[in-house]
Image 1: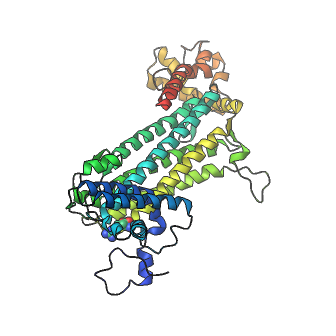
Image 2 (image 1 turned 180 degrees about the vertical axis):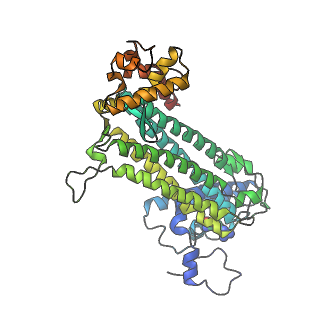
Image 3 (image 1 turned 90 degrees about the horizontal axis):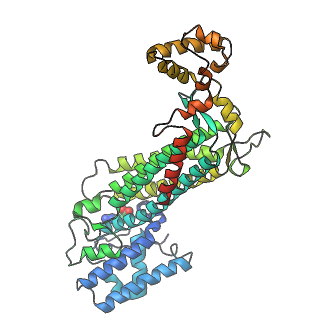
Length: 462
Ligand code: ARG
């Protein structure tokens, strides 16, 4: 590689060691900041003009040069690779000087790569957050679509992965909808704290030129300007927060994936994945594997890794900027890419998942999922819940020894355990009644779930 074009040649008498130069360079990954850095440069140029540092003609020359660079980058696929540079900032400045000559050498007045990189990163992540937010909405939409398509389906709800109580399939879908709803709200919060302009902080002490930072902020769509120059160039908490939200989204998606992986097994059999989202085995002809979901589950670990990297990278750094912070980019970019793809694939899988109603009902009515109903039945007849719980425990033991369900026991058999039981008990033990009684807000009764579905639809529109 040719010697890199430097932004800081004057003080140095010999060229950097080639291996060190390669190690030091970030252009292979920070070129992702290209567009944002050009836009921020255009805004900075306007700020310099307003401050009287650049003449109108100089500012025009620089702005046109920067716009040309944007256009050329789009039309020439080799544009980035033709120039050996350290990072995206050096690249843009070198290209500008190439185009405009000496006037381009004035652009860096009153700024540093430290406030520049913080600005470009915030601008870039702002867009990434918006893209993530719409992917979250898509995944929520896919959950709702499944819920609405299979409104009558019942599956066992689990605790400890043991059958617990019947729930509607739609209720299960809405559980994940709610998790993603909170994730969406978290993204809005992080966006607010990301959308603040650091430019004008210069290296760390603030800029010496009369640049109106509020104007610069407005032209870049930032909500406000940073209040402290040292803080503005030295923290990456907005990246860490975003990685944190990414990690939570992945945690939710990985649990969803795990549920679906289980439900797709022969043992559970509640769902069937369409061929479009499953894979086969190179050896076993019968296999249909849920690779898409396994990858989502696996990639959660990768995103947690990025969150940890960022936290550890920042820990104990002295103020203000340190080169350690260059390590932020690969971590946060891969985190957002991974979570975005995972959201998308999850939505696709959900759209191509069919739910097997008969199998769900069969599982929801076997394994004493109505034992709590029997206890509640006794409570309605004046028995204290703890006593009822114990009685039903004994009935379950009796039934299990005989391989029968509670609702298959005769009234005489039930009466041996408690004299208050009547024929009405069979109604109470039915699947329909079990569901219907969970009728308070947040419960799985069909009426509540229908309401919740409508409300969720409304929320998706916002
Ligand atoms: N590539 C650098 C980074 O990502 C840009 C800032 C460099 N600043 C400096 N003082 N060397 O952090």
